[in-house]
Length: 589
Image (cartoon, rainbow, N blue to C red; front, side, top):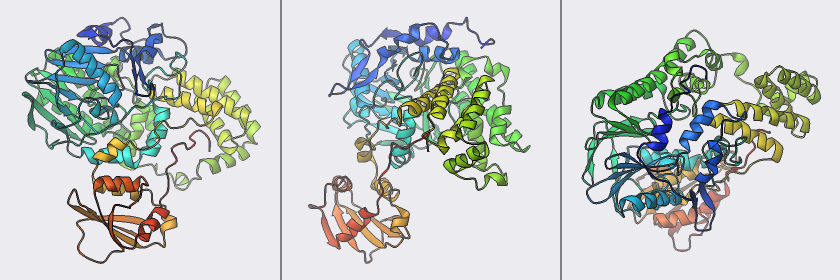
């Protein structure tokens, strides 16, 4: 912190002052049942001086990110910030407005659009752009439009949505409780960034235009848009030549991004350099899906260069040390960011810290195994913990050792010891209480916002028990928009393999409204699907619409579905399907 420009108020002027039009007051978004979806007013405590329970750098970032309201980015381009995890950007066209990234929920998106219209007029929505397939960038779309307008997205968008928000929804929902601090109180001691409220209604409208290459141009409501495509995840940056404005999506935001499981560091560095090359000298303002804009061509070029250098440095130095035999954990300890990058705020790891990202780069190249045979076949956590605690003389002895390390301010190793004690015996209250204290202290010292939330939520669960995931199931609005192949994949990942080892069955699915045919075959515990299968005998043929398929999967029966063959085959398939458990334990066995 000593080397950082603490006197510089430029970010505060950019985030709160420049282009400001109006706040949303009261800054509370509620659902039809009065459930609070978003509470921007709960950020008021951030105007205090930084307390001892927060890292000063993270406190500063939280204050900046909490600024909410309608802002003018440049003539004809606006942002609503502070309504959600992300920003909603609005570009005025010939007859209406184009929405870039309509937030995470329909309720927040509708409120953001109301704020815009209150000050700029009731312009219709004439187009939507999804920059990438994360819910906080598309989930609110039906809050701004019912469809019937161009919806642009990167190629591969729907497949990524299915992977991230349907196939893995149970575990991602559970981890989101930790990542975003959903169960933490908004306070100087608790959650100070992201996750303000309860989940709203997530929706999705299927894209009508896919961006398949860098340099692709599209015109939406008279607005010319030039796209840059990143491939993993599929993500768009876009340039608005009529406004000399560059939208960076999440390729560059006012922090160091989290690289796991999202991005390849070297590719990200190349993309940022390509952005500089493609649009050199053509931009006067750059805005993104998070945080606040940057004005001025030289300032933007400098910012992009620093962001580029950051990811290139992390990648190349990780590979250099990896090729000298260091493991991911060892490289994470050794890595230091160059002073020229460390001394600017936007390179700091508020979302993805250096050590976390180094391990992500290592994992991308070499996977989980560090090459040491001792780590090849380790016991899982509980079995390891039982043996470690036995070797150390029992639970009480482990707690005593942890207290000694805690006295020496070695919180990291105290946490490791106490984690073993808790996994070996969940009923060891002394170990649980002390580990909760250690996690709290680690959280309060963290510069990274998600690490803070992870530590503090872990402490909460040790004290109060498992905090349930707030998402009960994959959002229906997402499922409705996905392809039949992706829906059938969601069935395949629920098959309980051992229970299905000896089952053998085949079903043809004829989607009468879509003109599509699929065959699913269950054999050796795996459900295999094939599109447009050749004619041949199957156990059951179902002719149905996509809506009927979704109803069937929701358990509403097959009474109106035309079928041939043995309907008992469907019951046999259902009998081997497992149910996700979104409330699984994380800090206990």
